[in-house]
Image (cartoon, rainbow over all chains, first blue to last red):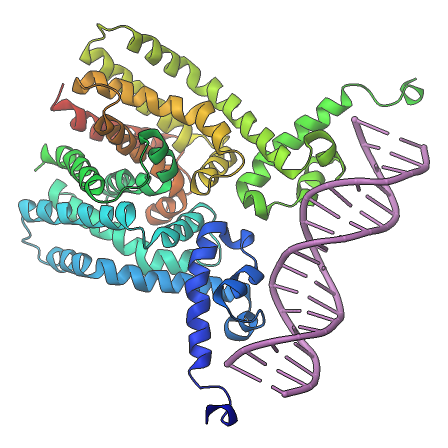
Length: 223
Length: 223
DNA sequence: GTCTATAGTCGGATAGAC
DNA sequence: GTCTATCCGACTATAGAC
C-alpha cells in the first residue's frame, strides 16, 4: 500500500515538470513581473511553497523555463543547423549548395517562428527577454540565438565570398532574419491588418515563399 | 506675493508633463507591471497622489504616455509619410518615383528605429505593447503603426503593379519592415555579436545602405 | 515532498488637511 | 493642486506540521 510508504519518489520530479510547463505559458504571456507565483502554482496544480523548494524562488523557475526553451528549440533546429554547420566546415562548399541550405534554413525558421502555435508562449518569452535582458538572456543567447545567427552568417559568408567575421555579413544575416522574425514580434499587428486569425496551413507556405523570394533576390546578384 | 494666492494655475500642467516624460522612460524600461507608481512619482519629483488625480490611475498615465509617443512619432515621420501619401493619391505615379520614395522611407525608418537614442524608451514601450497588446495597443496601432505600414504597402503596390489590398503586398511590406525593425527588437543581441556599443554615426549609415541594397534587389526584378 | 499558516514587504488608491 | 497618512490587497518567501 502506497499510503504507508510516503510520497512516491517521482512526485517531486512530476511537480518540477508541471511547474516548468506552466511557467513557459504564464511567463510568456505576462512576463516575469506580470506573472505571480500564485498563478504559477495554481495553474500547475501544485502548492505555492513548491516553487522556492524546487527552484530556490521565482527567478530560479524563470531560468529553468529558459533552459527548457533552449532544449526544445534544439530539437526543432538540430537537424538543419547540424547539417549547415557540417557543410560550413567543408572549405569547398559551393555557392549553390550554400544557397540551397539557406533556403532550407529560412523555411525551417519560418515554420518555427511563424507557423508553430505550440511554441507561441516560448517565443513571447524569448522576445521579452530580448527586449529587456534579464536573468535568462545569457541562457537563451548562448544556448540558441548565437547558433541560429551564426548558421545564417556562415552561409552568407560563402555566398558573398566574404569572411564570416565581416560586420556586413552579420548585418545582412540579421536583416534577413528580421524578415522572418517580424511575423512573430508583430504578429498581432499583421493578423489585424490582414484580417486573419492565424498563420497556419497555406498561409505559412505563402509567407515562406515570399521570404525566400526576397532572400533569393538579395543573394542572387552575388551568386 | 504668490504664497497667498495658492499654487500657480500652470503647476498642474507642469506636473502632468513631468509625469508623462518619466512614464515614457520608466514604462519603456520596466514595462507596465514592472514600473511602480512610486518609481514614477519619485523620478518625476511629484507626489504619489498626483497620478490618480491627473490620470485616474496608473493605467491612465500609461495611455497618456502612448498618446505622447504617437504625437512625437508623427513629428518625425510626417514629412516623408505625408509626401508618400500625397504621391500615392496620384494614379500616374511612376515606378521609378515609387522606388525613390521607398528608398527615402527605409532610410527614415532606419534612422528613427535604429539610430535614434532619444526614442530608445519609446521603442521599448511600443515593442512591449506589440508583444502583449494591452490598454495602449489601439492608440499605437491606429495612431502610427497602421499609417507606417500602409505607406510601405502603397509603394509596393505601385512597384509590383498589384492592388494594395492584396495580402501578398502586405506580407512583402511586413517582411521589408522587419529588416529594419529587427535592429530595434534584437538590438541587444546584435550589439553583442558585433561587439558594438551602439548603432550611431557611420554604423547607422552602413545599416541603411545594407537595408536599401536588400530592398532594391527585392523590388528591382519587378520594376 | 507536500501542505497550511503566516510573516514581512510592497503594490495602487484614497481621505482629508493645507 | 499638492501633500501626509493610511487602508487594503497582493506579493514572495518561510516555518513547521504531516
